Length: 148
Length: 357
Image (cartoon, rainbow over all chains, first blue to last red; front, side, top):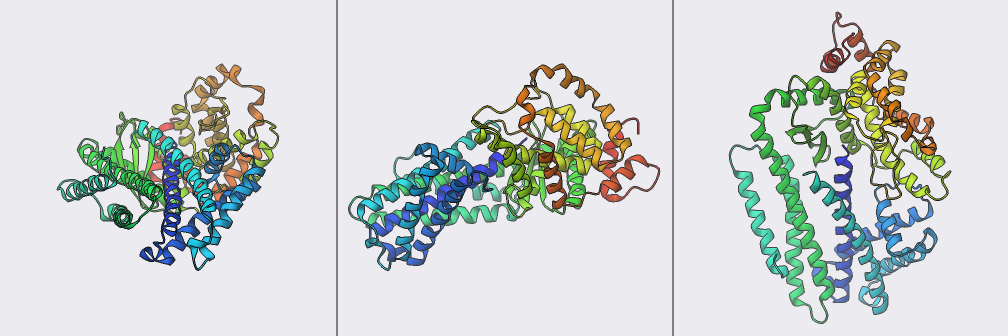
């Protein structure tokens, strides 16, 4: 019985969703000029973690057989949600990466991106987090049916 | 359900206190190495949420985004707590069942210990009787729960024991360097899936799942020999042993017929001919079952896999560990000679299942 797989996927996606939510919170904190309250290092780390996830998605977009089995369902889910193909999803992912990097590199992150750019970044990250959450929910249902 | 983040936080704090009470209760062993890391993670998250809620109160302007992000963390915390509550329940259930199932649980632990030796892994196992055979992770590489079928007894244990090897094989996934498909297996997957124009994605995804299950079947065969093949075939039963996944892959196991082919081939390659013949004889009924349902076998059945894919899985498995097939085969075929301690239980299961030995 492959409960190990279902459970492993659920926990992986819980962690992914949490990482993406941390990045979303970091952006909210930047917007509200509350970085000092959390410390710049911590905010940067949260953005960097999200950056790594998006980079992995980008790698998958270049090669459907890229062996990142853990993120493959996330990639497929995001592609479906955005109604993208492997080619058209890339610019969106690349935009997210460059926005996250601008926030990380800037000495004044609250001025690094315009409000519109921040809104777009948050919307995209929220979409990805929500797809991760859907996977968690699906696996939770599967596990609930099996008690585990 | 609490409507505000403060109420939800307070609800989580109360449940956290209940966990402390359950952990402090006498009678149920709840090891620190399981619960300390889980509770530490949960407490970190709860502290983070407390701090965020305090921050929320200091912010001005539109804070709806930040509020929503706190809600998301609260749901994660709720989910973490559910996991801890569930693991405590496992320990409670295990303790409640232990007095009736002492011998069976001891046998399970002995088999797991014997398997840990060749596989080079070491972890604790918590058996519980539930409704099927399955593995659940408490702490990766350290503690796992093993579900057993409700009707398991010492009398039926020899037939069940080899299936433990399949579940323990899932544990070894946590010990490998990566969860990714090995390159050699991936190359074959690419070759197979790229032949499909409109279903390439479905086949690609299916073969990932198949890899994992066939990897576990390979470990089962390499560690238990013919007994694994016999036990597996007695458990595999479906109205379509050649079933291929539909477009949305929900079927995580390969077709029964493919599993049978793979374990029999592995047995033929890795064990003496005599044992392969015995396994063939003992599984003749399953062969008949496949024949009876051969009309279900569609022309595309063989397009989904090839022997190179199966061989790559076997080779990958043998890179993970060095099987003790020689010792096991000797212990099965020469029962009168001294049996190595490391194969005792496995040899006994084989002798019991292969009555002609």
